[in-house]
Length: 215
Image (cartoon, rainbow, N blue to C red; front, side, top):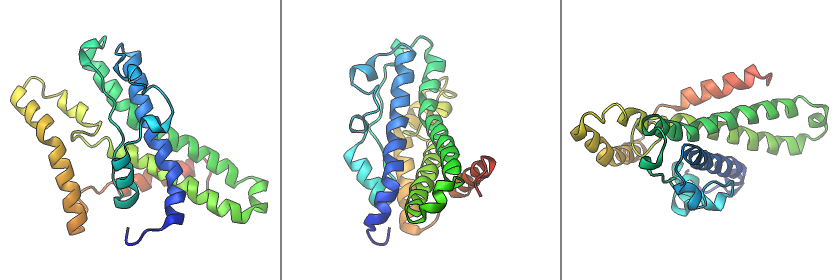
């Protein structure tokens, strides 16, 4: 952001809070369903945003455009089927964001085409922006978290393929986070887009909105 825009922040805040909360809740819930109670014991199987929001990561999201929530912890040894359950837990977060984006798109399309919307134009203008931000933020969380680099959820899909090669697995696990943050910093400082995911987000977002009847 070039300058702090409070009005804009207030418009995309609901989408960020909803997306991060449901994302982490989904990780915790699936871990519990797969046999590990670590997240439940830590109070993470809840839709209370305060249990999932990391203050620094939240502020980074607002001011820098990228950030993080509190990671959900689980003990792989407690899982009934560790090999597949780890992947289920990992994918639960981003796919919950995809579901949120789809549900919000349907609701937004219905509201926009209603007779009430025609009589509440000033309110609908603000509401439309809040919905659009929330929809695209959640598509963004879905796509970005599938990047196969630690600590992103997609890394579990990659790492599971390298467990037979301990040296490579440990290197990816240990240095993947540094590589990710290094790439993000380079993107910000050089203005070179090393994560060209916006066209994908835009394509999916606009495509689904069109599919559910929004014009």
